[in-house]
Length: 266
Image (cartoon, rainbow, N blue to C red):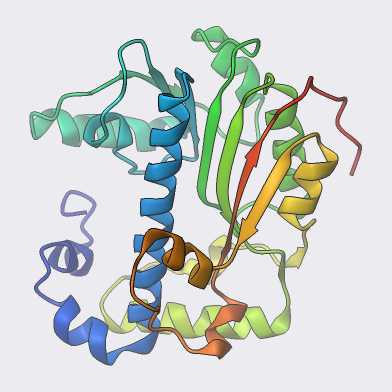
């Protein structure tokens, strides 16, 4: 966060602002709650998958994710990070400067998700005949157009052998009420100095409900909301108000228990 110039987030990580700003700003407190819950849930999901013997991990749109460095991985695990080349280069340079060491075989795959990212994975050793655990955090929340999101889930399903697992947060649609809620969050971050137009990064439109769509593509799914996630993790009740639920992503986990089926067209 410091290297990226996000000073406020760096101070938050150091826990010098959360006690005051987070406690007094409902939008900020709610966002922190969700980040904590989703991150912890995904970490636990990955740990369970590798304990079950899966040694092939793919993090889609990995951004500044540091799981190949900060989590424990069994010997023989390969973690593929799919992200744009410039983001991967930035992260690698920063972590090298910090002396960080990987805890798995990290394989950075520099490709845009609008391109043939599955082919790019295969070129660097990904084996779609082996079970894979997939993570998609803050991706299926409007950052892709509906068509691209559906196509991504189809491609992912086609590349998933029996025994594969998937976890993601998601929003089913971007309607006017959700856009209004999103603007409140954007205003909150801008008040704290984050000069990023988050609203310009999302796409309005109707998306297939991710758990239902994954079921059609041959997955067995479990859907949870933020309160359920926190309950499973034994965390305190979230700070957000009921009205915030319009903008708070839901969470889905899925397992591919049978042979792959041809994906249905959108």
